[in-house]
Image 1 (cartoon, rainbow, N blue to C red):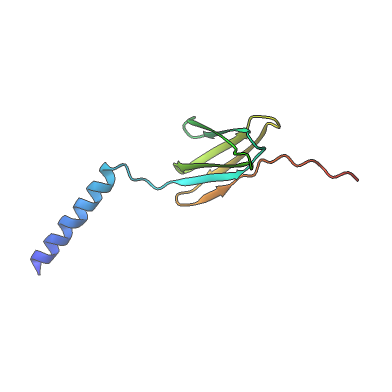
Image 2 (cartoon, rainbow, N blue to C red):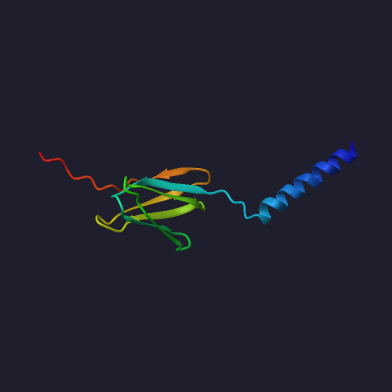
Length: 105
């Protein structure tokens, strides 16, 4: 019985050490739609780190493996839109920046 407990304790210690050493962290994702080809800048408002990506031809963009925190998502051109949001671990946050022209009256 004690031997089984000792083995379990060793196994849990090994798993914990491995996940810590491998840099395993809980992360989140921001995805959405913007103008095709638009430059998208995602800024972590807690530490100032920025990530830049570009929307595909269909307007879809995606930024993965973000640490939980507050982020600003900016479409740089042609319409220079911005949104602020909270990213939580294990979640996908959707931020659509597509510029929609108002319909005529």
